[in-house]
Length: 386
Ligand code: ACO
Image (tube, rainbow, N blue to C red; front, side, top):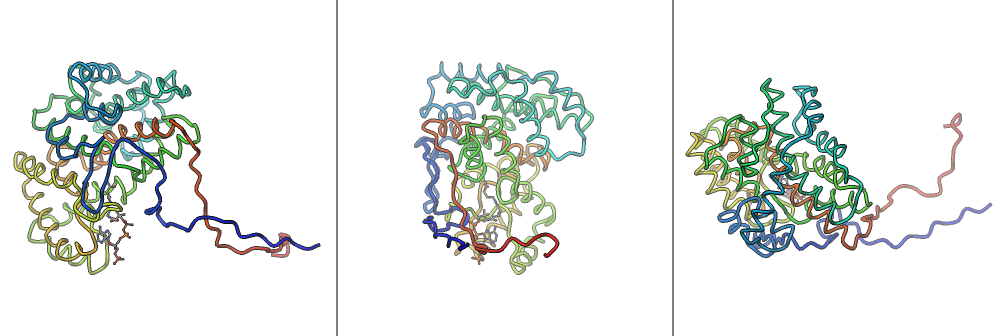
């Protein structure tokens, strides 16, 4: 019997890492990596970081326009009404191993949240809008409650008179934050809210494109964000700053890393080949926050690393990314190193949820091809003859 010769299927050229593939349309953020531009719905990120609030920025992303004051108030109220966690979930948090990694915990708890949402499998636009609000509003409580639990402290209930940034710091520390601490977190939340088709957003869109549910998409995204080449980089930046220890050690440390061809965390970006526009504002801002909180040494070390990198690798298009200065900012406002990536997730839920809703509007299953590079026409060999 003759074996049919396989025909060569016509598949597009392999694009490793998908850097040259456009896989979705979005109306939320625009990125020009060559010029270092990021806009949310046409508004430059710098203007939003200086003037907006996280709640207003999320309204902008989800509604494609800035809210009137009354609309912003109503949106904030909707979020505040969803701050609290189901008691059963709080009990579950109390049972969690204290040594667990916070991103593993967050991924698990966001999945568990779905069990308490009666609209979990309702994929109407209205139900998805509700789920987006619930996910955004409850995630800070999940992170703060686990942090309190692992430190043996009582879990603090949400205060619905506070903004999302204020309330998170209140639930984390058990006391209301100063205005400047809350503002620092708010700025970081604005800067991280959305960023085109980054790896975790792509992952969320792939999941929702199967007509799975929004919670599953968030779980996929959190797992993807966790990696050190993506959201996990801010933790790695802080670990590096701790390892360096003081400004005198910076030059030798970075020289050795570059000699070994190690990556310097917080530098480089798949899209930006100029400075990441989120890092521009954060640099100035983190200096102020660091000065106010006695952490200027961290800022000075970071600035020196940036100077060396500018000499050594800027020609390759490697500049600081948002994670480089967000690490110093988070540390300065008293957030533990292993919560940094959770901060990123807390904000990016806005982008992930917005992208899920966009994907479902005219959805087509996301299913790329793989170029098969193995052999053909191999005989099947019986197990006792291998
Ligand atoms: N430090 C030193 N060299 C670097 C760095 C870095 N951080 N990033 C890239 N390079 C070098 C590479 O070694 C490579 O050099 P070569 O051409 O001589 O081999 C060149 O720059 C291109 O690197 P690629 O890996 O092809 O770039 P890619 O677009 O795939 O990677 C990435 C982007 C993953 C972000 C990379 O820059 C990196 O690993 N950075 C450190 C991790 C980090 O900060 N991630 C956060 C990204 S921002 C975010 O997720 C919010």
